Image (cartoon, rainbow, N blue to C red; front, side, top):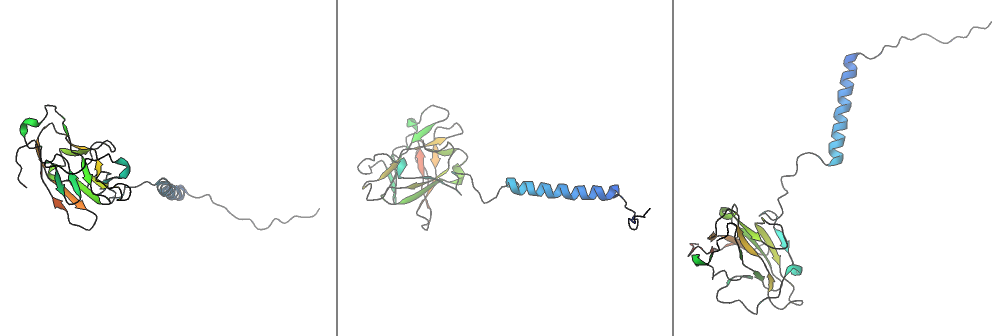
Length: 199
């Protein structure tokens, strides 16, 4: 009978429990990192500002405009290419309404082709917001893009208002206005039925 040589014998040892535990930990960490990258996890970027805030104004375009009056009136306020209707006629404290959360209509007009950004100044951001039917309630900054002169020869008017959120019905509002991107901000003051306000 022929003898079959199966070669030299080798001693095989199973991995120790400590080695298995370390290998499992490494595999778990790798899987967790892969899952975070795949699902876009991690901390959100700090550079992303809330839509409608000073760092990320909500944008309103020609599609959100209404038919304007012919020209600004004596009771309106015009700041460069921005027209705030009735802004000079709202000083009388007796004109404020009694409702706890009160909004006042202040349509915004922008000259043809112009871009204007209006922001609620920091001292008033906690209790005054821009109330526009095309955006969510609570916006404190908005950019208004007027229609082009060829499509609309008159002012582009955005119907909106200003609203108190803390229960008051009157106060002095200090918004900032910027035309385009390179012009400096202009600070104005609007009296929301609070009498004469200091600039």
